Amino acid sequence: MYATAMPERGTRRIRRGRVMAITVIRAIWVAALCAGAVQLPAVASPVEEGAAPATDYGPDANWLCRGARADACGQDQTTTVIAADGGMTREAFTPAADPPIDCFYVYPTVSFDPSGNSDLVPGPEEYFVVQAQFARFAAKCRTFAPMYRQATLTGLRARLGGNTSEPPDRALAYADVLAAWRHYLSHDNHGRGVVLIGHSQGALVLTQLISEEIDGKPIQAQLVSAILLGVNVVVPENADVGGTFRHVPACRAPTQTGCVISYVTFRDGAPPPPDGLFGRAVPALTLAPVGDSRALCTNPADLAGGPALLHSYFPTVAEQWTPHEYPWTTPPRPIDTPFVATPGLVSARCVSDGPVTYLAIRVNAQEDDVRTHDIPGDLILGSRLRRDWGLHRIDMAVAMGDLVDLVGHQADAYLARQQ
Image (cartoon, rainbow, N blue to C red; front, side, top):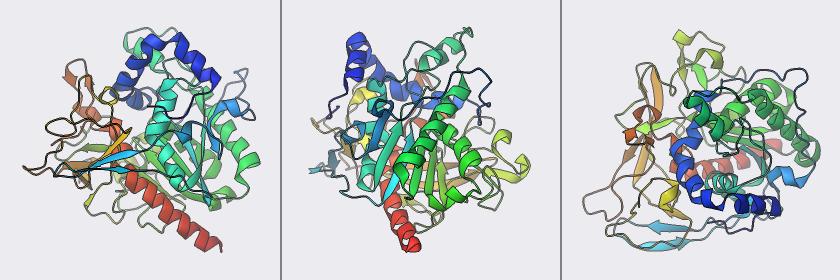
């Protein structure tokens, strides 16, 4: 799965926990990516006096991806494209030789480190999530992804089991990302446009970063866009700005820049519950009255608001999605690429249903379609289907191609305006 060799620090982690490696991959999308939304507040508390200092982001070892070097963002993105009649073609991937903008990514809750906050040694879980969620953006931008001392899955499991003896330091996670952002601006940015990308815990941290460091400040002129998935970015009713952010509006056209793309995914006809975590206005996330606000939904395949087919890239290996074998075709056929694409199989539209707003995902398989007639992505804990989580695990994957294309259009528009 990992085409690029991991650095020695990551290799040591693998040797320590080789027995856990398959468990890590199985569990990442079952619980990891949603953990941040469960446990973390919308905005972390300030760093307390006497707290551990923020990480030094001068050393390359503290970055998963850093510009043009060979690193986690160089992992294989080759895709098997499966047509409705079962025909398979191989789609290669080539990163841009000289991308004109940068992308800065904060990954979701994936760490299996033993304490409430992770260390800065990348393991297989961090490499996997970069490959699945971020490396493909190298087609349009230079890629930057810091390690950070996030709230861990281990701590989440302990708290769910009633053990609150070692709560995570949520401010520490934000302090690290803030330090990485400031270091990037001082040493790597050189006045370039930048896209901020995050999911779940990563998107929450970036929401705070935008609110405190970018929104309404001179650096906002360099914001190409922000992609904040699996969280509730809030806007006033019938408006695109003024809720979570004062000056960063929703993206409503591919040529619009300085704007935010955000959604939560649920199956069409199965909306988020009105008292659930997703798709609703959350008081801590809005400047406007909650009763006059909504969660933002921007369909990356049609920012104007209509339904559209999605360009999905799903990781192939079954353990990354379900605890059992997942067939992509009937009968099952071997696939030797890290990713699968199923053109025309999935479409999406933004839906408002009572107090909730979400990206409704529809599977369009016809009776004679030999591909899967469904998609993996539901959260199942034990034998229980958690409908209140929707398709949170695949927020990024289900529209990955559309998001990458959109960043390309926004980069062109940003550069045109600069000129």
